[in-house]
Length: 141
Ligand code: MG
Image 1 (tube, rainbow, N blue to C red):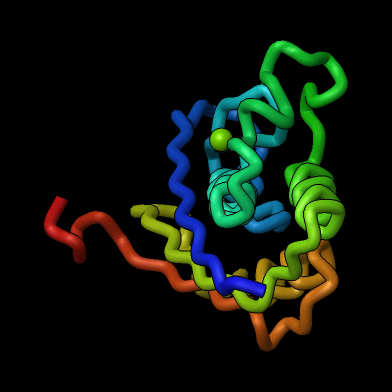
Image 2: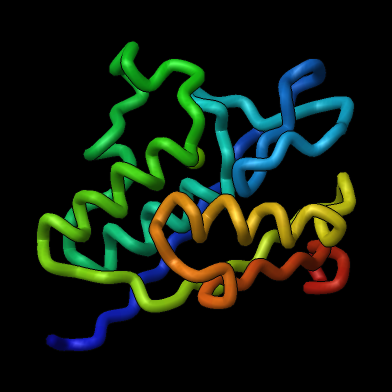
């Protein structure tokens, strides 16, 4: 089978009082991402990367934000469904590498839990999932 690579990116606004869910981890913070689902930007970007690699569209096609079934849903469930869609199409993810860009909260203490969540959702070994974190300041934004 041909080897494919996908790319995903996501941004969400933050709002006071929202849970900050990232990589399936609830990270304590005064604000969280706004969205129809739990607004987990990392998992949304991974969904798009996987769907893109398989030429299966994007997250908005599979989980429209007008569908009440996805209101406040855990994005880990969306990632599980994306994994199932890839399997149905004959694809098996081999490894994932993700970079989070955030000023706050600190991401690095939660990276191992994120890796475990992502691996479990896709049936991959944790060693096949990598999550890195940086700040926009470091990138010169
Ligand atoms: Mg999103």
